[in-house]
Image (tube, rainbow, N blue to C red; front, top):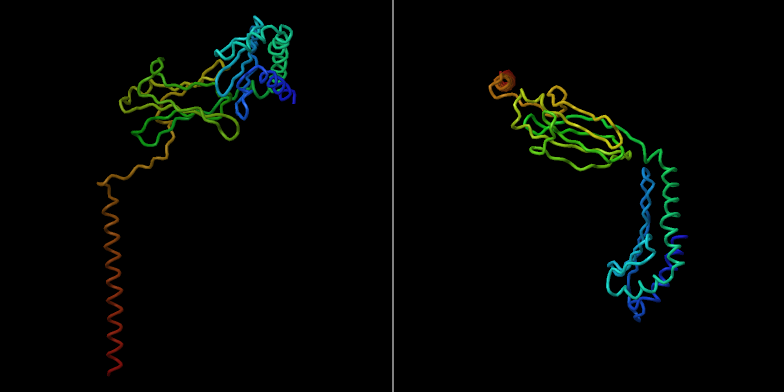
Length: 264
């Protein structure tokens, strides 16, 4: 309600100063953006307030000089009128540089157990087929300020690497992956590659060596054509056909034999 009341109050003053809002039957959009930035290390606070009209910047407030900045020619008259109201501009400065930072610090204090937590991920190497890229997959980390990359001999790689987006998990944590094209990597060079995961606020990185023995895959190799599987299957088929012929022959013989006895 505090924000709604303040916005409506400013809108009434804004309407009285803006010709566009005086047009009979005209419909316009009034926009207002305000807030603050607080550096918790230096204690520096920067407040900002800006107004827009019909999707375009109109006026912006400078708390340091207690003046308004016209962002289009139509705002010049409003700027001069608002600059004269020194008391009102002092209120603006207090809200942006004192009240809002107090709100921000209070909210951060209430939510710091969640906002400031750090969860390390599980990191796996995945591969679809032996010729596919190897994906370094990290999941379960928090916050989302993280980086994952491949490096060779300690140097970060940019070629033959494809970085995926950071995506949310259902539990509020995040996941990401980075793929390495290994088509030109010789077996003896695998040990020179490693995946590195870095999480903001955590000193130690998670490093995973490129190792065939730890790669997870669902790939099932197809037996080669010269394996004994083909002849075995062929022999089974032949046996089944012979068995079917024998059964049919016995059935015919018994039927004929029975018919001959009836005629005797």
